[in-house]
Length: 474
Image (cartoon, rainbow, N blue to C red):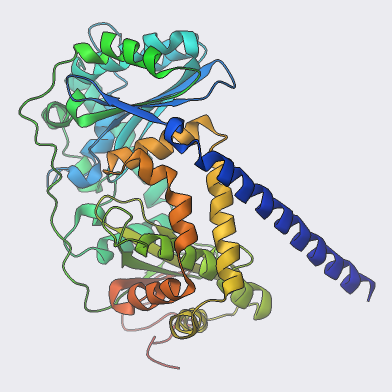
């Protein structure tokens, strides 16, 4: 009885704290809303480079990012991995910077730098003292057009990429299954190709591939500069014109992203990976979904709220049903990724407890989805989900790097500063009926790939693993 009382007291206290946090969050949101127009400012250089400035005077540091409108989904067919490969090669040399010196120079300035490649973008960034902003701008402008690549450097880095793939994907059963599920999810669109590339295609990449890709996509009129920190728009504009402004535009560049269209999905797909290296058996499912860029008004916001209610965190229906109530899984969750240029993706997963069949978990998940599709969500669930997403948005305003990434990503996929600033308002407009409709439309098995990860060796031909039965059986 004593333990039960403590538990109830904790629940009451948690509820009060959540209410206080929610009130504070919404108050902060209201306060920021009136100043949304001045949070980020945009202009364009004469050579076509888009610039976004996000003043933040709390510390004399800046986050400097250069985004290119090119990612793995823009690669030539048969050359998978070239976008990520070039990202690595951009740290080699130019006429002004010796081999491998770029990051060392930034470090000697007291800063940090890195880069990343996604399906839709490649970005390079530094966090540096304000008085060094002009220096890193000059360095990025230099390697935008003056990259030097020797055959030896390219081949050496290619080995590095192959080892990265071996360590991060080939030696990770979960990563292998995810890669295979992505390949099955997309019939035609290049999102089905891994960002790092397929091993047999990476192995064939050479110096000419890298240089051609570089010349095709790296130019100021295909780039976005984002500077967040202790700067004014005027300061950034002056420095940008002195550095990036001197780089000529590539007049032959076609910055339209013409990718294969994904046909309608008419049948569900299923995969099973048996691998002794896996921990416990786990269930995974992906759904093809619209992104914020390509969805109808309110549609992507409804999916964000739907997945918050269904599968995000310990208060979600999925976690409470599978982990807390029925104790079928040790963990369970899911998410909606709506930031893609062409489409988005929904994911749900669960890690089975010992002795629990994945078919049992799958049936429970399907039942939960059916409950929302048929009965919708409660107003209390919807309010809690909105408060949670609003809180995440507000907390992001306190991070310089988060702000730079938030506005940079929106710009690289074709959204505006206003789209970022008004996102909380659009979230708050969503009704329970819209969430129900989103579940009916997009949590459709015909739009999905289901994957089972089994921690056992592949059974002999014609046999099945003991804990896996036909999905059609009860």
